[in-house]
Image 1 (spheres, rainbow, N blue to C red):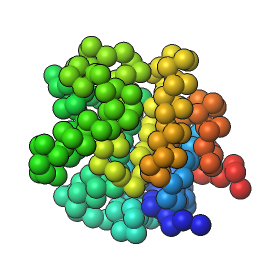
Image 2: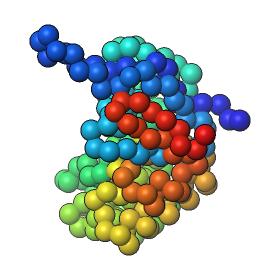
Image 3: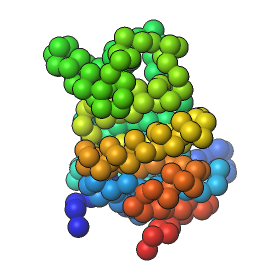
Image 4: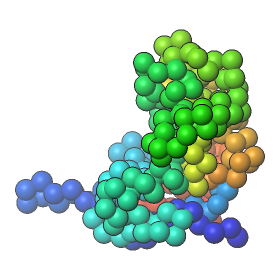
Length: 228
């Protein structure tokens, strides 16, 4: 078995509003191993997106811990958490979140430029990744000049360009038509297999979930492995 790249142990998230305490996640234990493709399914409001926010360091748990590549991620100070996130985690969302005033190439370069590296090297790596996702002819196009599927491919290239340990994706095909969704799903599977990067994907799409190595179901803040 390969080593885990992302782990959660005893993960709890609760929100307090005056005297009321609402617990969203109840002691989640999970892991994603290197090269795995894992899907999380569950009804709306079950806690899936809250879990992704904790795993990505965008929010902190009320109890428990998150470890990324063996490092305790959840208790780091914000600057260190941002550094670990940039180094080890890629993100893909239902809506692409590309910067509209920048080209596809410039958008994909952004995570590398945050590392204050060479612009030429960032452009070279971003170009290679855009070619890999089938957009070699669209480098200079801005998001408004791209189709929905092309924009999502740019977002995927941006998530992968840093060669992260794991990509977290929240409904990555949820805003696409059926044919485009199938194309993006096939690309996700290919990239997982070829690059060995782990994927943890929240989805309502049974077709995408069915392509995963493991399926986890979130139900009222508790997680069960359906593949066990």
